[in-house]
Image (cartoon, rainbow, N blue to C red; front, side):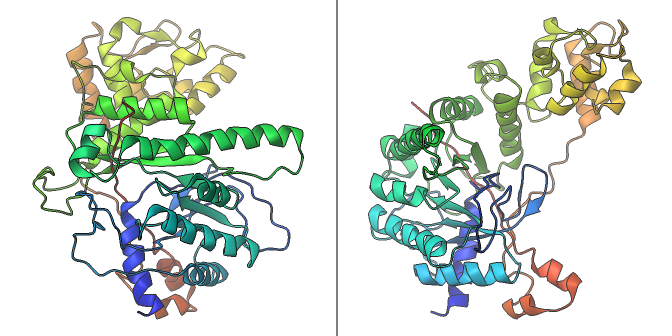
Length: 447
């Protein structure tokens, strides 16, 4: 099979893996190709807000597993392809030299067995780093069940690594992916976490201690393939952050790719539910919330009409209104419409004077939400009796969320043929450089 045929098949197959983003790692570059400083790609985003591009492909879509929710399952009738490590290296270097990409996201189905697949992935990144001196960003998929020595060696060459959990409970794995198990997935995550910690301590003692996955590890959870409620998914994410120090948990709305009777019958992916989980995940990581504060056994799923922070505030009106001129930082973060940056600005601004509503607006506070939960200089501009139903109705009207435009990873081959990449026109080159990546993925729980 020609390499361009393989690229078409394996770039399209990679769109279901969303467990990637920019790293913020700063791999040094001494005379080599690329620079990993605050970058990564596949239309992802760096810490400083830049949009960046990764070559996002699978090493192979030939899999020995028969996971009901996966398009690459062994029983599915679809074109199969497998890159050699040298072919992946050639594509990466040539695409980078043409300025189409800034790095590589390399995943794979399990071909032959986990060890063999991990060996091929390791060989690929090793050639890139040692033979081509490529110092750009590399995100690699670790294969559960592979020998720890292979994962360790690969971790010395890559910036970030992901071990995808996919289903949020042991019951879900038994139902839809019986060849996988919780222990087999969590074991490499624990190994990676321990090695990162060990290398970090070594770096404090030995100046030239080698880096090990400097940008940390991530995972992916599928949302909607199993009956697990949002609270189970969020508890799992919280445990993953606490026990494995993950950089990110990615959520992917289940895409119906199979008629298996064990799977739910849905007309479209639950993208709004995925969005709510991302919002809640942000609250866990940056706003000091706990999973049990946002959801409970009585209310196990997020409100589709309100974001999780507003929903929490309405259910806890006894904490409000908050006087913004005196409230501490952790309380400011719990006010709907106040983000991390605007809370920091409030703390800085009120050192030189009291704030009013117009000042809050200039500081970036979203008053259409915040006004129901705050006072400024003792003045309140929300609903007088702090009625839960009235505030909820006002917030729903104010936010007016639109859920009609799902995002997706674009195919390299949807709108142009490969020779269009060689165009000299700058506007066409910009458009062709948008071969990015469709993304939706799904969940598992630490039980």
